[in-house]
Length: 455
Ligand code: GDP
Ligand code: GDP
Image 1: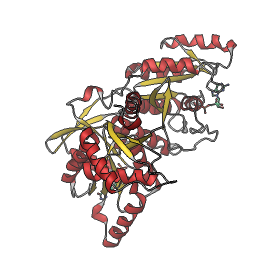
Image 2: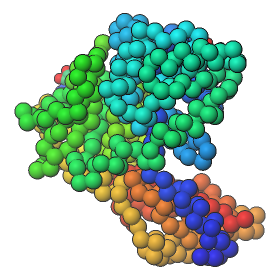
Image 3: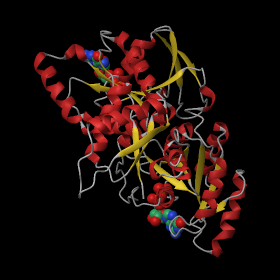
Image 4: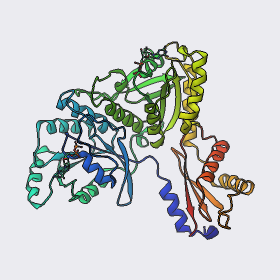
């Protein structure tokens, strides 16, 4: 459509770019100090994943978006935590296990200067068991002379090692080409096989909010454990639980039930677990302890789910303990601290007494429905036409930018592309988002809106 100054190719390109569903996930795993974080920095092309020399420093960000040769994917960095609490093998295995579970492909980083160690061999066993595609990265090959070191890593039995210098960038392009071959277009976890199968729920929240209590309450006796990976230090386990006559899959519940007691690195470990669970799920139920002030950690967990583009339900737990005063302050805190998910269905529950447990499933269903909503182009444009006529964009510099037309490029979560005659201000974008939400019931889902401006 040569609609109002946009040519067809431009329109189609914009729709394709905006319309991607959930992105495939690449996990970067390996022993401490092999250069994982340095490599992640290379891959994402930013200095965001700061390489920290101080031990025990916690980072809460573990997933990053990256692009190579025009393809987008997510990278999970497992490089940010203190390893010596469980003993080296166990802790490397534990963190790798979460990351591998959530990943569609894995980059296994080995220090080529050191060669393969017993810990590396242990990770290889995990990788074999998981059966995910693996690219073996022989890191710290800073020059030609290191190539021979890389060749020794054939012995790991993972195929050809990719010689790389994460520090200087040598060989990273070739390695990323191999990564793209290994990565599926769309994540198997969120799309692939699940058609008609149980919907996947991640129950997330900071420690002690009541996740395990809630899980026990809703599951009762009839829980079915699936997806057991035997013989490893940590078993990421999904559970099938029947609620309201429907079977749901609660992902990574092992991380909820058996808590690993770590002193240092515990926060990072929890973040990794949360990120992995969110990646595997379609809907995140974020549990908040209503008896305590909403914290930065609560906000971070909410942000993780929003940024991952998952359907979201917020459950305020321990409702049985709230007095009138706390209820008053809680409402204020929700307004000021959790405004970013004001659109999420909310339930006030008690995992202890069972209060309002029956409201959980309807809230989850509402969120999933919003997440999957597709607005027909005709209806969308009728709506946009009326909206723009009734509430035009403010005049700027003698001109009035207009939304000309739009289309929904994707779902899970809904993604829109709007085509405009001039720069659309942030305030007006938010206004459009609000009205879209009101009109088409996008309860419980983030929505993405990108705007293309006619040249
Ligand atoms: P991580 O613990 O696996 O995340 O490792 P880091 O990325 O923190 O790197 C550990 C150390 O190895 C740092 O001092 C890095 O500068 C260094 N390093 C990482 N990649 C390379 C590389 O390609 N060549 C060399 N010479 N050093 C590297
Ligand atoms: P998790 O770390 O998020 O899995 O939290 P737990 O389920 O282990 O709960 C932490 C503590 O909060 C435990 O002592 C629970 O008994 C308590 N708890 C959990 N839910 C409720 C609730 O709804 N009401 C009250 N009063 N206590 C709760």
